[in-house]
Image 1 (cartoon, rainbow, N blue to C red):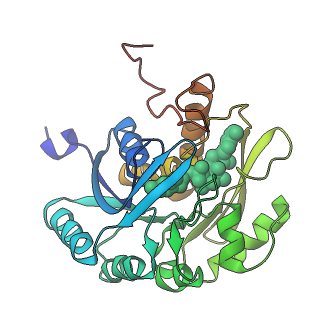
Image 2: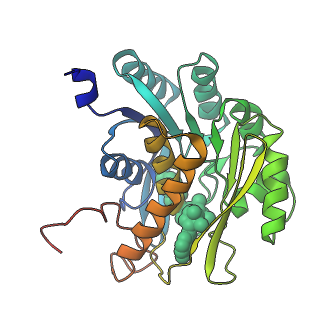
Image 3: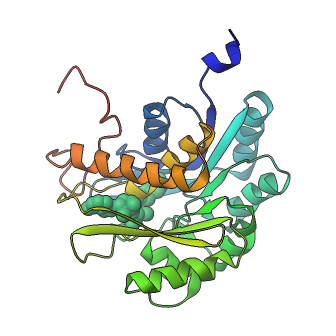
Length: 274
Ligand SMILES: Nc1ncnc2c1ncn2[C@@H]1O[C@H](COP(=O)(O)OP(=O)(O)OP(=O)(O)O)[C@@H](O)[C@H]1O
Ligand SMILES: Cc1ncc(CO)c(N)n1
């Protein structure tokens, strides 16, 4: 038997740490593990954060980010990568440099700028995202607020989301997923995917829960995990959305923290405690 098939594919997350464990690098590594993918990580920032918000944040130096990227990429067959919090233009440009050298295959770019609790995680010009990482992205995954910041216009309806996805695609990503988690209307959570010239609406039942911390990170890393496993792009995105919906459902009754808590990344597995 070919031993190569007995080992997990490798995915890489380039993101910040959430001390509360619901978003950021922690959510990404949980998601990779839940998909049976080996997770490697490049830490870009450390945040002091819980379910109520971010109380402090500090960027990792460019030298240390570069050293982490070099260490991982020199030794692991990274099949897909994902960016989350980059903090500002300097780390964004550094990551773009690796992308330009074709060292970040199947790159999912989650343009993290503000948390749902309103804390800023990006001090820089939103346009730098499109210029720096747009052409290198396999999928760009802005939420409503990020899409508005990237395009400088209001987005209020699903039709606006479709127009935004088309407009963002002109900056070079192969696909754009505009997420509608913050469009609190109706009983569906609708995202729109512009992929290879086609528009798809991805709808899921809206889960009645306050525990939605880290859903964006979880979705982006589930897409990366599925790309690492060899799923074709639209199926990887659709499957990742189902995974997030199930993770939201499974954690709906949790009371972890007093604010919006984390989702259940390992909902497919029985825990000894539950
Ligand atoms: N209550 C919900 N029920 C079902 N799906 C949801 C719900 N809230 C969010 N989603 C889905 O979760 C995914 C992430 O969307 P969202 O717009 O919340 O991202 P985000 O703002 O980047 O997340 P966060 O900043 O909390 O990590 C999308 O697929 C969205 O449709
Ligand atoms: C570190 C980190 N990255 C991303 C997000 C967005 O959810 C967050 N809250 N914290």
